Image (cartoon, rainbow, N blue to C red; front, side, top):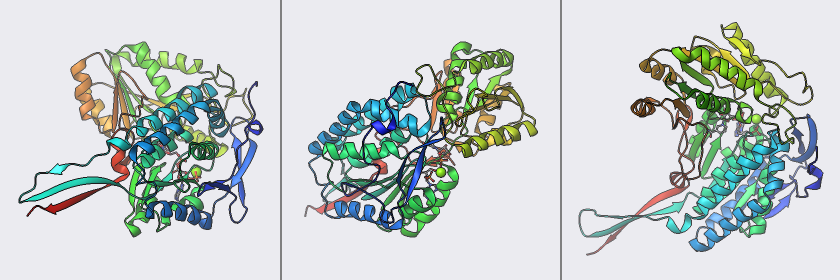
Length: 489
Ligand code: NAP
Ligand code: MG
């Protein structure tokens, strides 16, 4: 392994509150583990209620004094561009932190996580000077206009699969619209958020505008959700925790936006370009070890090409290169934790008991006994009601199901509580768009999969959540609309 080690990267592994790095008041810490070896790489503070309170108060002061929201829009743009510049300048370090935190291949962290993060900051850096209201032609002699104001203090809670990018998707639009943020990264992956805090400070983002509290969900996350000084919670994570947050938010009518789980259908019609479709399926379910909310985990294949697709898919799954995440040839790293690996393995067992057949994988790779590796796994089955067809596994497990007609596959694809994304492969343009319209999902890819762009909105139908992140739409998540009436009499 010829790379920087975590010890070589010097930055404070502390909470970031009111512009400074500090320990938790109680001095408690928790370990950060490198999933590819299971080794502890460092410790970070465990923020308790009192620490969360300090961070929220710092953000509250910024909001109540109007310091950030009243900054000239062009100055705020310049600051956010400076943040993007610094992320770009520190791209290698950030990619390395992502790999140490998650166990994902460094080449993915370098090619995807960090570039998407930079694009996201740049995209929202352009918005402050373009946030406009409207003049409304009301009845009577009045000048009536709307304006967009920041929501205030925003608590942002993100998962461990794309730690930096998930944070960027939330932080960049919130800051662009003049809010103050308290970010809680996932317990497993706190490092890139702390590094980002350092870059924010270096860029000159004023004290208290951006704060990071590290800790677990049950204490640190819950304290942020319960805090009366928080105006909004933006959450990405599991549907179960999303439901809990929604219930808790009711007490203060906190604004809530939720990006939750998925069980996305990925459909191959018999007229598809099969090699391209198989490539799309493989990256749709095995990219990032399948730890992707958008993962195309239910693969529906039309009967005439079913056997052929299975064969090509098996071959492709065998070619996925599992290994040391720091090896540039590795395309498939470790799962996030032993607990998660056991969860994935449990699901494979349940699938087999319910009648699915394993045609690839389904094991812990012998070569990689250290670390939390699991083989890319392909299950085949007939029944869309099986547990493995309905519950999100959030790991490298594809389930392939056959179908006959377009009507049937639309019904099957929509027979899920989730509605985050869907993909379909066909060369028939009208079928492509008719099926895209019929699918109940926030994103539909035609002859493509897993694409995201800062300018394209993204989010869920049904129990995959509500609110759209990215694009212009995310600005609505972080603004209140005010209507002003003036008598002209
Ligand atoms: P999770 O358990 O729901 O955790 C997500 C975040 O919420 C973590 O920071 C977690 O903290 C925190 N949390 C947990 N319990 C909490 C509570 N009671 N109050 C406040 N915060 C709490 O999800 P996960 O297992 O880490 O992540 C996987 C899930 O995220 C999957 O369902 C996946 O589909 C979803 N996801 C969705 C999207 C999307 O955009 N739709 C993107 C990525 C992932 P700790 O982990 O530190 O305990
Ligand atoms: Mg957790």
